[in-house]
Image 1 (cartoon, helix red, strand yellow):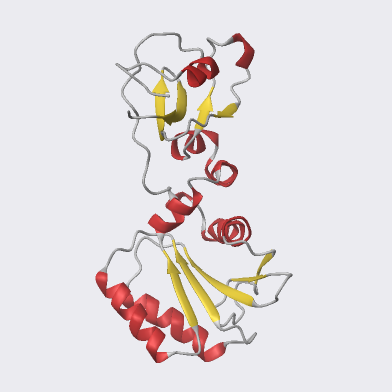
Image 2: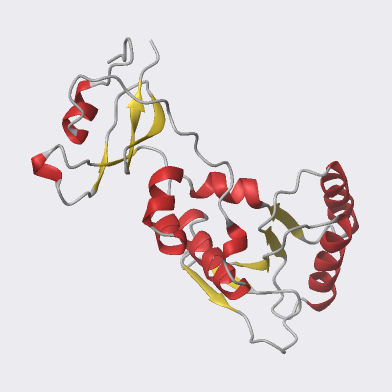
Length: 225
């Protein structure tokens, strides 16, 4: 199903009640979620949700309280089948440097209070510095007994784009509607959808886009043919 001359694919027209009028220009989606709006403890709550709903662990719990020696661990996640645990270290920061990375890994490597050998460092900022990548490789060589992974703001955002419920919980529905792909907020023109609930539209071979029309945000899947 294709979109031609500014027209909208029929299933999405039915969902939004747009009729046959021309579409407005697409509203660009944000690349990175506003992690800075979350207090540090709330960011830890987000990482707990990611551990379970994105990474597939069965349980994820905070380790320790403020003031305790946590050994470089904020969250401990585990699977019911096969066992094994992983430690998450949460950094709600505006900048994360190679020094920060090295100190985080060293703190965990020295302590290892639970005998966990896998560490995931989750930092809220965008970190594209080549030195971070290079130092991560050096740390993996230095501590071969550990599995060390990092996840920064852009990767976290990519992981959450298809998790509408999580984005809505932490940033609210307007952000979730604009940020997440494949969602539609029905406008008042459609008498069957006055509640404004979101609707999933899937059209094979299409691209997900989000539009703002008046005060409502619309999204859908389109075919560029």
